[in-house]
Amino acid sequence: MSTFLNIYMEVLAIAKQNNEVLVNEQITIPEVMVIGPNGEKMGIKKIEDAQTLAKFACLDLVLLNNDPKNPVCKIIDYNKYRYEKQKQIKESK
Image (cartoon, rainbow, N blue to C red; front, side, top):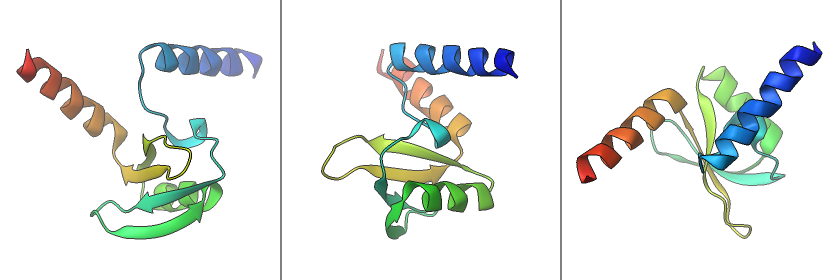
């Protein structure tokens, strides 16, 4: 069990170094504005409720705006989001 925890902590450290967005349990903000998978606003929810909605949809909760006054999370497929973001970076070069 401690090996899993060590690996998880390393992944978090690498994500923070690479300036990647926070996903699922990495998000520690108590309340966030949630945007659904189809772009609909779902309102301000407690983080636990937002994570439950994402798990129910078999998707990820991704923190898009880390503004302390108005944190925004979206329920999306994180791997697809990351792929498209990398693709945009390559195209801009």
